[in-house]
Amino acid sequence: MASLSLVAYEDSDSDEESVSNNDDVSSTLKSDSAVKQFLERPGSCTTGFSEDRPCTNTPPVGPSWQFTPTVWQQPQLVDNCKAALQIPSHALPQNTVCPNPIKRLAPSPAGVRPYIPKRQRLAQTDDCVTPGSSVRSNPNAGTSTITSQASCSKMLSEVSEKVCPYLGQKLGRMELPRRTLLQLQAHQGPVNTVQWCPAPHTSHLLLSASMDRTVKIWDGAESGRCLRTMSAHSAAVRDACWSPCGRRLLSGSFDTTATLTDVETGSEVVKVGNQFRVTCLALQPADPDVFLCGGFSPEVKAWDARSSKMVRTYKAGIQQTLDILFLSGGKEFVTSSDSVSRDSADRTLIAWDFGTTAKVSNQIFQERYTCPSLALHPEGESFVAQTNGNYIGIFSAQRPYRMNKKRRFEGHKVEGYAIQCEFSRCGSLLASGSSTGLAHFYDHQSSRTLHTLRAHQEACVCVSLHPVLPSVAATCDWSGEIKIWQ
Image (tube, rainbow, N blue to C red; front, side):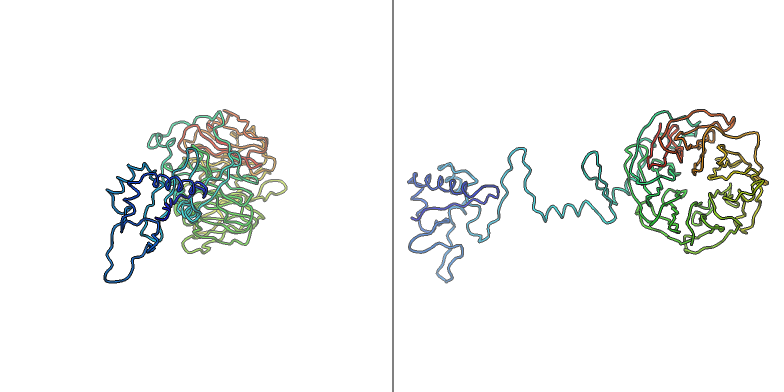
């Protein structure tokens, strides 16, 4: 009988180990004469060959051929043979009839990861990353975080655990933030604005628009992760705002375009060209599909997102529009410009009729300061204007839009920056940034300063108060830093 050769298909074993295992098995077989005689019976061919007729894996062709099961195809004989010889199971052939036996993976030692073929690894990666996904590297941890479109959509549709207990409750007085909750540093340029999502169930989302040409959406209530980065513009993004439903956001850029983007998918709903650099935007409260664009132009243009067409034009003898604010009901709006006369302000604040495009008044503010930002009180009875005179003036929201000269909010500095101001949801607080890096909080009724935060080293451009959480605010500065306060 020829020497018996047992082949074990182990990917992780070397050739030397296989040879040594075969030698041990052959010596064990030769030492047991009973089993040796049993294996030499006719028709009990294994992987060896006889001298008279070689044993092949394919049966001979002919009518007189009869198939006789081999030893390894008889389960009872295999069990008896293994018990008698005490042959390790991994040394026995798995299939001697099949010409292409299937290799099995050997068990991996403890602490060693099994080898995964490259094709299988690529297939797993394709399952995890879907089209439209974003990859964000964390330099501190040294790993990559893959956020797919599906996971982003889930994050945008679920209610934050921190916000959920406050939903449905009656709005109370806004509490003053005291300490830093999160610090975000992801923009490569100055951040022009931050704004919480106005929809209560997704109010944990925070948008930021930067001079680095991007708009980012953050989980500002809990993790501080960047959920989506939108790069729809080829120049600095000067302004951005949420739609009332929280599913879209509007952004304007120095590339002369304004873009309405779907937050869940990250796709552009509409993109319009204004032929001037856009510095301010406003959505029509009664019809959010209509929005206004202003910038380095004597005109303010109204666009309809459904038709992607310009529907109205508001012309004034100015050089630049600094901010746009719709008054209560959306029938009228106020624009702020850089036009200042020698003795008094002329056309600094202009009130417009939205439907007829007519000027309602252009003699609202009679002081020689420009107003970089405007904010409406939640009750709609008044609005405020940030001025380069280092104070905030308060005006009536009803005609003739008179300024209250007995009340003003002072203590912060503007110094040429587009410092923004904002009311709390309850209307009791007014927050403003400062060119000195401070964040100021004022009482609306008395106009006195309630609290001051040392927010940033650079100019604090914007302070946004959370619409649901009673003591949470977000600030941004000219260096690209964003902070969440509580």
